[in-house]
Every structure is written in C-alpha cells, then in structure tokens.
Length: 173
Image (cartoon, rainbow, N blue to C red; front, side, top):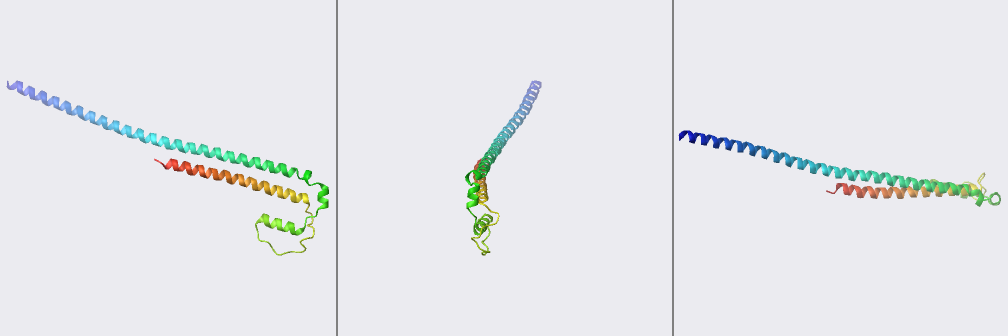
C-alpha cells in the first residue's frame, strides 16, 4: 500500500510539473502574441502616416506642376501681345507721338520702385531713342511679368494651404 501511495504521489507531482510547464509555455506564447499585435498596430500606424506623407508629396508635385504650367501660359500670352505691338502701334503712330523724357523717367522710377529723383532737364523734351512702340512693348512686357508673378503667388498660396492642411492631418492621431 505504501508503494501505491508513493507511486500516486510521484504521478501527481509529475502531472503537476507537466501542467506548470505547459502553463508557462502558454503564458509565453500569449505574451509573444500580444507583442506581435502591438508591433502590427505600430506598423499599421506608421504605414498610414507614410501614406499621408506620400499623398502630400504627390499633391505638392501636382500643385507645383499646375502653377508652373499656368505661369508658362501667362508668359506665352504676354510674348504674343508684345509681338502684336507693331500691328497696334504703327510706324505712323511712332512718328506722330513723341514720348517725353519726364514720362520715361517716371515710368522707369515706378518700375524700379525707387524714389523719384529731382527733375533733370525739361520733362516735356522728347526722350531720345524712345518711341511709342517701345513704350507699348515695355508696358506689355511689364504686365506679362506681373501676371506671371500673380500666377506664381496664387500657386504658392494654394500649395501653402495644402501643406498646412496636410501637416495638420499628419499630426492628428
């Protein structure tokens, strides 16, 4: 009877030892599973953030391309207008109209953004070598430059707004 009791105790201890070992294996597997889930969640969050940044970069490229194209169209229109000056300001008009030196000084000062200098000479005297068609070409070219700059600014403003919105979305959890 004593042998049976010893065998029974040994069997119980063996079963308890095996159960403890199995429980440790299950616990270890559960912790590895939890770590894998956390890694997957982190990878998914990183993937989503990278996708938003990629979308932002692609949108930025698209916006820059659009405004560069717009500026090119504006410049081409301006060049076309400058080419048409001889049609609208003929040689007869050039001969009939003298451009005063005062006008040339005022225009050049306004174009440069500098302050007006004092009057130098007779402002009503004809400006040597400046014709009405040259004035028309200069003004047309200035307006073309102005419109190209406006298109650039509008494009850059749109890009800045897009970047601001996208960065806010990237920072959002």
